[in-house]
Image 1: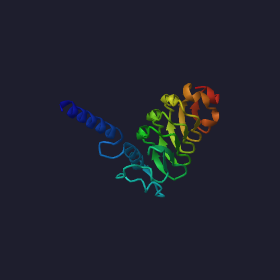
Image 2: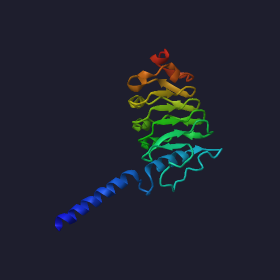
Image 3: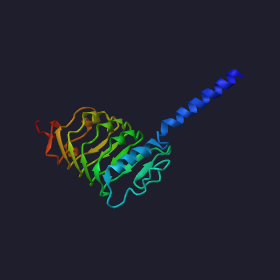
Image 4: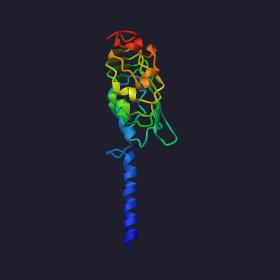
Length: 188
């Protein structure tokens, strides 16, 4: 009897741990929290993010969000939506994210180094924004990254080398007069 009770308690604790791994402290999906943090940090004059509701259980029905078969955010298609503001470091919580496209907007500030947590990221398209500052060297550890376009921003400093960045040519960085490094043949 005692071992049966102990088994039930262990099962209950494991179930709670599994549930809490995908649910935030507020009781919502952590991906919802991450995306809502981004929404709160941007202006959205055309209302493209209006379907992004903080009380949602998951973001898979939201406009511009695509999920995988496990209801995890796989793609954010934010390109040319007219948004302005900053990229939230909370995007690093989207562990299944493979494609992040926010080209042709008015995003400002730095590219958050927290994006290095996106271990499944295949494509990062942030071209034609107003991003500034250096490119975080941590981003070279995005091992699955195959497509990178940071062109036509206001980025500055040395372009990180090595890791996944060894795959990319000067085309990924053009139109950033403050950048320097071997890949663009501009000494620092």
